[in-house]
Image (cartoon, rainbow, N blue to C red; front, side, top):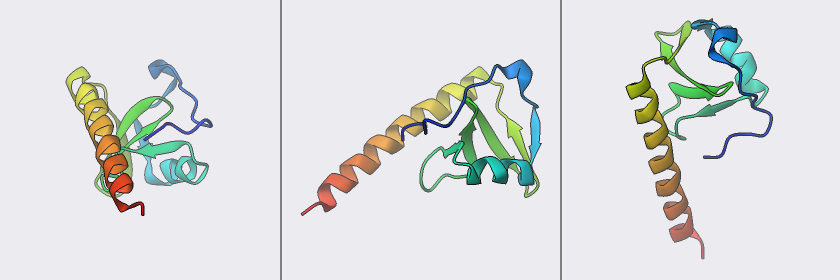
Length: 91
């Protein structure tokens, strides 16, 4: 899963720790959001940081280094698995 070119990384101090679902939806529609995987879309990367959907109305920015490492590894494994699946499906 490659980051979209339009996604800009921002320093953590310039981002809120919590964002409304409406705000995140706007960024998503502007193609600034990358889901962790095609299936796991409750964790996304926006502005170079990982965010988790909390309930139905808020996104919380991940700050725990262990969680961030896990998200990065999961995204990499998911992208590799998807690429292998797509290759198998090609005629």
